[in-house]
Length: 167
Image (tube, rainbow, N blue to C red; front, side, top):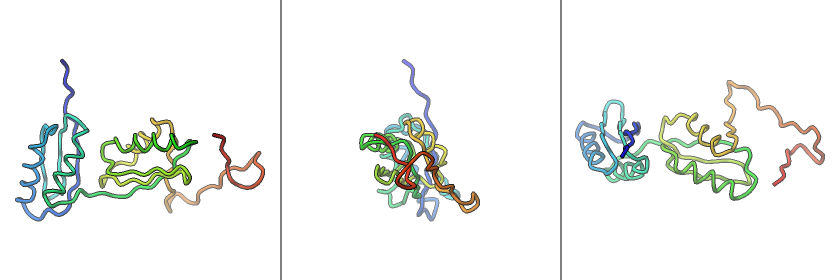
């Protein structure tokens, strides 16, 4: 029988003030099923975990919160191209919710947007890859350095500047 090797995860933690805080979190995390190894660094405010199953992540987040600390998160918002029905939105929401590092997600078909809460520092490339693998096109907001967003092409459309879709 082949067992998968543990996967590394970096979890940012807020609220630690001393070595006892870090040790308390490390002990709690080490005792969880699915956690192969846990190390908590007070200076970097990070927990380094090796998990045998990504499904253990919610238990990890709960253990940190129950110990009196906060899993550092950040909001992300992105446009989604290629959704044509409620099933598309529900499928993408389900796939994103199961992705490591995603704490919560809401996908709105009408606005073609996804609102996520993710671990602080999670690379946006990871979310980009998940969205693309699910068969959709991620549309990240433009930054000030990137310049203005080009208007969508209206060639061949009548009745206004909106790019109409067929379901």
